[in-house]
Length: 260
Image (cartoon, rainbow, N blue to C red):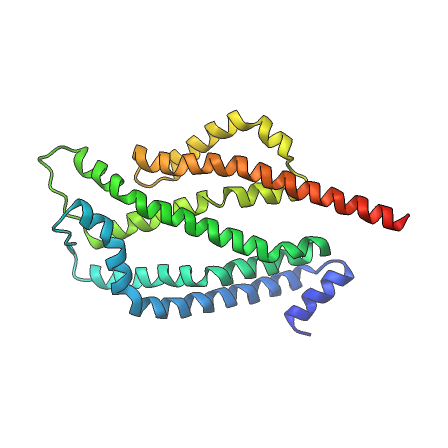
């Protein structure tokens, strides 16, 4: 019996054993690693185009936007690192799908229909967060290059610059996943829309702390660019949760009326 067949039988039969869970996790991780490797191979050839794209905000701040290398192997290491970043980006749909398929046996049949909305919303919000981070980099670099005074001329290595922008895009992307988690908690009855609205003051303080902690640059522009959308998404998630819960109650009443 294959792992997928074991998963299906476990879903219908009740639960999976610990060894079946381990086998299922191993098969999911292998698929994820293969997708990342394939994406990294494509990223090796896309490296110069992606580096030029990421370099654009720096060129708007510094006209002579030339990176320097302080070690002989730094450029080679940067290409490998960026290839892996690109590979993870390409493999993100596969990663999310494998995560969803791994947790599917623990869900009820009516909850499994959220697979496509879950993936689409997670990918869309992550891409939105990464885009906001990219367009925020210009004022961030202006702040970072001028805060030290006019006597300091910035000379960045490609690795330090790419690390900054990649971590910023990752932080913003993860921050924008906030409503996906909140909606999921509402669907599992851990939270309610009313409770979220009651906690809005505490949520704003929490968002401000999160934005200050996960923003790599630590400048006020990045923190506001991350914090303000997260607050807006917080209220939007409460509204989405209220709509989904209302639809669930309507289906429940309809099923009761048909049964009677």
